[in-house]
Length: 260
Image (cartoon, rainbow, N blue to C red; front, side, top):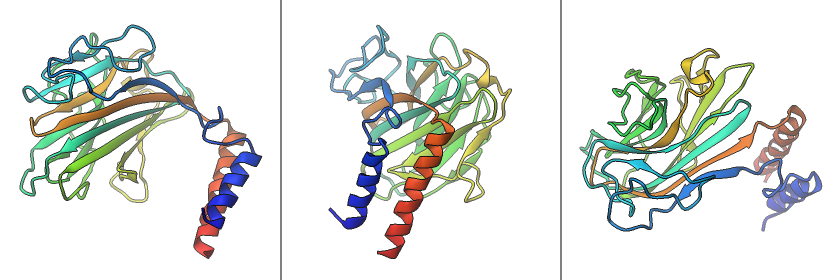
């Protein structure tokens, strides 16, 4: 372990901000590794769930394979204010350099009961949708029911393999919500104006109405795509003092790294 890493870990421990501490800890609401049988996912319970929730699904099997294209799978949820929600979907992607059709989507729904129609935003009840194509391009749709992309780009991947997409939604009761997206740990520019990497959801947008979000899930338009993992977690927005301390810790880490 290098000197910089040791110093950073020591500082985190000294301040009580280890990864297992409540300041950085997240509660996993849902988790599924799609290790079930090659039968419909509809009605199956995820590996981790807060209660008795089950998947509402069309055309996705419990082993992660797609039985028919053009549908989605959701789990019920609701979003509280002043909370950071992280949706992580890992999937196997069959790369095709000329394949421009969207292969998979991840995001949220506002319909009730859970929408099992086509997940792209031509369905009126979807939003915060990140879609990827077979050739590694992507597009972000803010919703609800908004088929105009807020941002798009290329270069997610250049070969077949597992790809992890993370959507991070930070809610607030007094200011704008924000949405951030990451692919294999690299943050995407959702504003289309780098370095403004966050998409801002104005307060008063229908997503911020209590109970507007009713589900979280994934969609699929290709049977060459396979779901490998699904996780949805929540943690409180850090208190200002904690957020400032964390910013100081990571600024310190960045300075040490530049000097080394």
